[in-house]
Length: 137
Length: 185
Image (tube, rainbow over all chains, first blue to last red; front, side, top):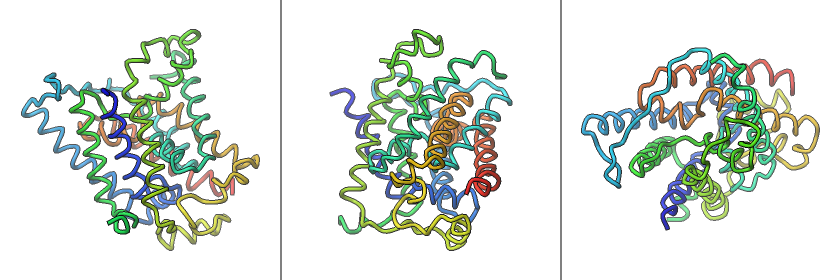
């Protein structure tokens, strides 16, 4: 099955986010209170490794397993879009203690209350789509 | 072995595996970004009929939905087979700060005061989760990505837009933590 590899990548992600407690509301609170290195360590390690890997992929023009070049499409430059959108996202991230990935991992962890947040996130996405042309980008 | 895996994993294993997942998706010809799925879900539910933003071939994003299914399964495996039921080991300072707001020390992964079904169906609990989720969905699409797309994939590519978005994530997170939460709790 062609899709199986994506499910496996997701499983790996779900397990590691759970086991490193990155899906915990408490850990997100601790991060925004600057009271532990834990979350900064997780994001920092991932980004440092990510920078190195991305550099290597570009430098050696590596290809994906089907032989197509791996391309990085840079985001269009803007300040309001990322700053306002990011800030709204952050307001929600700290209150639910879960960003989109961990939200779904929490479903698997059987914290059913998170389904309310997932419903909210889908509704929020819909509203953005409906009014996006009226927002500063 | 299982006992060893059932302890909480240190932060560097997590950072390592997250980077590995990102590379895996790149070599599968895709890119790591979870919140795009929320748009796909809207589209799959037929939102494209009314709103142009959702009028695209969502089936081309099936791979990402499968990743999401995997994430749910991963959470299930972790809770059922790899958990020793221990409370999250957060710092004493955080425990004290939260206690002052009426949130008791961790007994599991999530606080009872928000995530127990009892709390979730009080008006306060329900609104925290619903509006919090709403802000996440709205903000992620507005900013063009979430923690995975901007903080991990975007920063790895040294993109300025992603840095601005991550700064925004922190402005919002600090506002909730230091201004809104003391008002709500």
